Image (cartoon, rainbow, N blue to C red; front, side, top):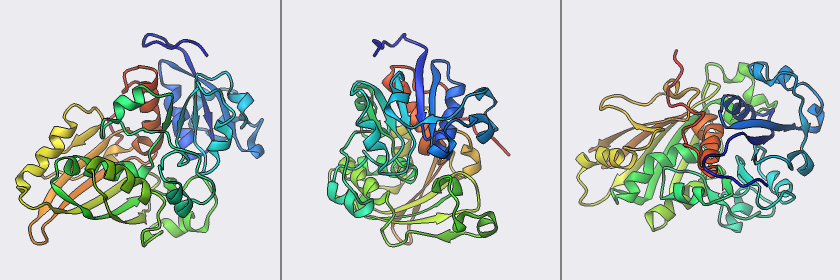
Length: 352
């Protein structure tokens, strides 16, 4: 491994699972990054040796690159490896890499602290725990800076934590009674053939799924917010599938803590994110929408107080493939290499 300094450039980045939605979005971002050069792009056995551009026609910068096999040998020369694989598939591969090789895992394998929670929500053997890569929350930026291995957060978990973290940190809401309803675009389910994801079944319709506390991001959300709050956090989470390709809109509610002036809720968010390049509290009266964060690494937030129920309402919007996956992975990679964390990323959305 070469010695890495803040002034170094030309780092080689390999992407495992480059043919999936998150992996392909990461490749797109890396193609425009001034300090990372694309290394191996790996895919499933069926695609090994085939043209990457034929499968990802939007990425004209790929030239004549072909998908490589997913193996430690194919990744050995990379300065950083990004893994974008289904849960349970990263750990075995990564165990074969040099322990000093920098890695950002976009999957779930290293997010949870508890083997019991892993077994309950994912099944199989718990692979361990890495530094959790949500730089804007709970001092995690400094921990990422000192790391070589980062567990990239889940998409829903990112949107929900960014909405709640400032309020929990300020003791403005009650930690034991949090309710979340969040809608995601179909790319959140990954690039796979499934009847529920067919255009004819998705268009003009919304549906709920994994209802009743069984969604796999639930323990991740509760784990991270509990550490921030310093006490157990309980989240009732209902995900929805929306008829759009990408984006998450999360509506998060919690009871106002006793003695807290609701007039200060907005200031809690402003104070937490005033210096953050990717998290934006919108002007009063303006509410987040997924179209505004399309193609970005941004999160848009707004807060209101419902005096009828005594509940705080925070609405959060992200691009599930941006701040919810590939954009956040690149933000973490920038930190690992002591680069400006905004390099190769944008908070400016594409509209219409």
